[in-house]
Structure formats: structure tokens, C-alpha cells
Image (cartoon, rainbow over all chains, first blue to last red; front, side, top):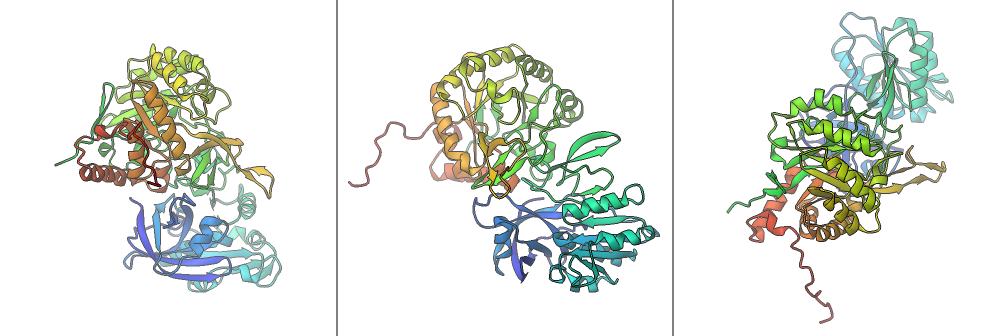
Length: 256
Length: 313
């Protein structure tokens, strides 16, 4: 694997979000994996930004990302014009483990920039004929993401907004809690508060897989900058979000 | 005419002057998806201690202008686990592996050096007396010449392998520290470790990393590192290995001209794990363009003492 140069072929901007379509040499990935992305802007900002894959077409050589502007690096990524160069290293990290054939439906819960990898996972589950239900939460209707993509994924999503402007009023974990018994596993990606709520909801009842976010130096396991405390077999250690993650079993995550 | 990129650091011959820096390439094999290790001059492995360490709590890193601050806290598996689980896989790779090690006391340094001394895959040991990120040990050994001498002498008697001493830029007198290490038996000096640094989130009024103080690395550190390499290499006869913000061939050439006999690439690997290839190609191209047959001809070849050109004439 090597750092590759991609070209922006499309940048669809909505508020603080940009859906970037990049063209170049695209290696097949799995839902939950990410790329380290940076533009051709010299040494400042220096490091790539870990961005989850929204979707890809390996034959076409295109890969898509939904980037939210949160700081200088993502601000510049969101502002890239078609034709601009992007340096990308990926796909990286451990993906979501897919449910076995014949398993009961799984729940997918996404919030904010946690939605894109769940969209990718929904598409993969659909393609394999594996049943799932998608839950998306946001502050307001305007913050719900990728609704068109979701409509194409084949199942009606359950939407929840904190202000009740679209879908159910409240947190995404509320409709999930009421139906938890239907699912053989819960997959989640989103803000830490949401992941903690999913973890607590599922504890001792159903396996959960949480995709974590962290500041990263390298993205491929060598800098040890992105660790999160985990506990396995009674032993607490730090594991790398970029290498052992970003997807962790909910039971193991201890948070920083 | 091909350019000869090989260099010698005392008795140790490297196929080229580029080494991967400790803490930026794991235990070597982590880089294999990205680099053919045998094309490199060498690889300095993640810093080891006798007992190992779980490292500091997150957050551990913060990006700054042209660089980053880290306080990983020398998370490592410990010497024993390294020797049992990691080293055997390195033995078949034909490149120079350098074990970086540290302790919280002179005794722990000596114990680590003694344990590593018997491992055949290791070409040298690099003693870290300059880490800003651990509570005891590390940088406190590297800041005054007397303690540098004490810990270096102690480790010297614990290993027959080439012993490198990695120095801090955070010292009042680089030459005095460098000479202390040389007189105590060091075979080479690595200049420099990260610079102690700090960043604060003004909105939250909180430190950006949990350890409060971390080490600054990356391009922002480079001018400091070039200066330390220059000062150290003129103070001692043993070779100096330059490190600090190298990401291009031009950066590496600056270090060679300042007096480094070899150099290490660290933070730049985070940005592009393949950058060693680009750097080596750039150095070969520079040598060819300047009619340099051996890269060693560049070492310390900055035109020292020559009068500066005066712009107004």
C-alpha cells in the first residue's frame, strides 16, 4: 500500500458537510474502513485526516467520503474544487464484522459524521441479502444526512430528531431500545454520547460493534497516538483506534 | 556513473544514510505493507524498557503549525516480549535494526542494554536519554553532562554492540553533552529527540494532551535540529545521526551538510509511509547533479568559515 494521489471529481456541499468523490487507484475496502486524507497544501496542516468511506466503485476508480468541517484540515478538505489533488492512504483499519448468513436482522445506528460508514454497511448488507434496520439520529431535520442514499438502501430508516422536526422526537437510542429484542447485533457510529448510550443499552443483551473516532497521527498503527482504553478478559490496555479499530466490540470499550 | 549511498557509522556499515526513527515505525514489521525494509539504511525500533509500559492516557497527540506534539509515554511491550515475539521475525531481513531503549534509573538502562546485547538481529543500541514524556528517567538523564556521562558509561559496559546516545535539543550546551557521551564510550550520537512543548485549548482552558507537556516533532523542529547537529558534530569525533523534521531530500541534505553521517525520518512517515523512497531518490539525483560519487563526501561539507556573500556588492 502507498500514499496515492486522487483527483476531486465532485464536491457536493451542504452546510458544514461535503460529499467528496475522488478518482484514482481505489483498492477494495470493507464498510467501517477509512482513509487518511490531505490536500496538496504543504506542511500546514501537516497530518492527514481520518475519514470513513461512504462508498466506492473499484472498477471506476472512485471513492466517496462525507467530510464535516470541524477544524482547519477538514475545512480545507471541504473547500476542495473539482480537479484538486488529494493524497490518500487507505483503506485502513478493521471493518465491521458482517453478520453470518441466516442471522436475525441487525440494527444500524448512525449519527452525524457517523452516518457515512453505516450507509456503506447498509449497502453491503443489502447486496448480500442480509436483513437490517437503519436508525439515524440528529439534532434537527436539517442535520439528518444521506437520506437519498438511505432511500436507495432498500429499507425504511427510523429517523429521530432531538427537536422532533422530522421522525421521532428524541435520541436515536429511544426507538432502538424499544425494538432491541428484534436484533442479533447492533452496529453504531456517531458522537461519543450516542455510542456510550448504545453500549449501555446493549450491554449483556446483544452484541454491539462501535466505530470510534480519534485524532490520529499516522492512521496505520505506528505512532500510537489514537489509543482508547479497552478491557479484554479482565485486562485493561490501550488499543489503537486506527489498527485494532476503528470498530470495537462494545463490551470491550472503556473510553478515555 | 552510479552514486554510492553507503555510509559507515564507526564499525557499522549501512547501505544508505536513511534510517526510520524510533517511535515512528513500530517494531519494524509494521512498516512492511508500505516499505521494503531492505532498501533502507536501517530501522530504529520503538523505544523499549525492561518492564514495558502501557503509555500515557489519551489524548496523546496534538497537531501544531508545521508539526505535532506527542506524549505517547513510550508505550512498549518490554524487552523480554520484544526478544521473544518480535526480534525472531527481524533476523531474516537484511537491514540494520537499532534497538532504542530507556529506563527510569541507571540500573534499568543497564538491564535493558544487557538483555538486548545478545540479540543477533540488532546492529546497534540507541539509548534514549531525552524523552520529554515520562515522569522519571528519560530527559532528566540527558540534560546535564555529568548524568549523560554516568548513564552512558554504565550502558557501555553492558553491551559490546555499537552504542548510540540520543540527545535532547533542550540543553544549554550541546557540545558539552555531546563530549560527555563520547568520552563515556558512545559510538554515535543521535541528534535530536523531540523538543518539550505544550498546547492549550483556550475555549476549554484545558491542555491539549493529557500529559500537558509533549515532544514537538515535524518540519517545525528542523532548524533547531540542524543547528544541534552542526554543534554536536563539531564537538566530537564520533558520527552524528541527524533527525528532526526531515521529510524531503533537501531536508536530509541539510543535515548531511551540517555534519550528520546518517539521518532518521520520523514524523514524515505518518504523512507518507513511502517518503523514504522519495528522499533516497532525491539524494541520488542531487549527488549526480553535483558530481558527488560518494554521499559521504557531503558530510559536514557546508562551506564553514567561508565569507558570506554580501548582497549589496
